[in-house]
Length: 514
Image (cartoon, rainbow, N blue to C red; front, side, top):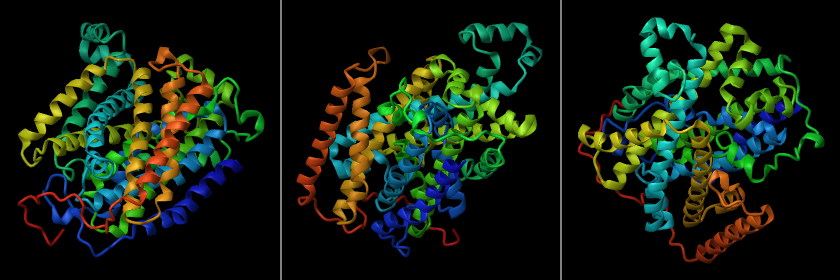
């Protein structure tokens, strides 16, 4: 129990202490008009209240990652708590806040434009393609993940009564033996994503997210109370289970547990809220604060997964070969600690996490492609031109096994975090501010993601090199990147924090009442 309480205390303290240090480095200017007012277009640049933006940001970034990731990461024993807590405070929350500030000071620019401005035009082109692929992967993962959980709550025998045995057999035969409910639910989730991608942000997302947030709070509170009141057995933090020999933590745990510690996907979401924020005074609460809460969610699930199954061995047996039963573990823990009704509410809280990340993943993909192609999104036709190809590719990926998609999503996610952190480091250096806040996590993520590609088995599409050789090569590349930065440091042109990426304001009058 003490390790759980200590983790919570560190996360809360990190928000006030380390979050305050990072915020002071950014030097907020509360009186400067934000892009939500200067570029208001009624579609993506829409002034919204801080509490609503905070909920949207939290639900945007907290997908399946802070649930599925920590559950699988718990196989490495209590050391997963170290990565979640320290990674969140020193890496993930810093990453989200600085990228949010960069977008806010650059007219709400998307991640590829920010990377291009601070790392160079070739980096922008590569980042655009890389990010668009990641957005489609995220959207696909967050269609299949929640659909598995919803289908698990529905009685299979009702499908035949509703659609007839012939339709049920056709669905199961067409979709490779999957349950008919699964594919029916996936279709409805997919249709919601289409609407959320194409409609103005305040028409659907801004209105429905508070309801989703209520379900999320039920899940977090229910599991938190179960831990505090002993319904979930305590987890022992000892040297004996700190380093399971059969599961080397480096670099696997850092790929498996991304959301909840640090995630490059968040850098694509922060600009969405930077286009709606009314004042720079709220940057810390929205960006750093949302990531801290995601860390709390990850900490709760990492502790619950180990405690409920009595340790690593029991959890490994429950997850099964290939770790393909994560959704069943979620269902078992929720119903086992809160009963059938409370468990169902808690599962709904888990379900809203991926849904509220999947919808904005496609939306962010649309905006990134629009910025790259210079297609104004005021016209409905332009939205369809970008969104339809993304949805078509995601529909094809639905037929790929979930485990394969998750594996590539995890690596792409963390690689993007490395690029984002390097752009953040250059940004702080150009402002003559505390660039040393982002340099260590940037170097670490560079070494870790490259090591993973080098040492992971060839069966998983990697090179399968010796661990020591792969680690040495990864560290060498990270050191070279640091050397490049220090060589450039004195040559970087200063930036006063004013607008660096000017865009033509849309011809929409500002509404003083907003």
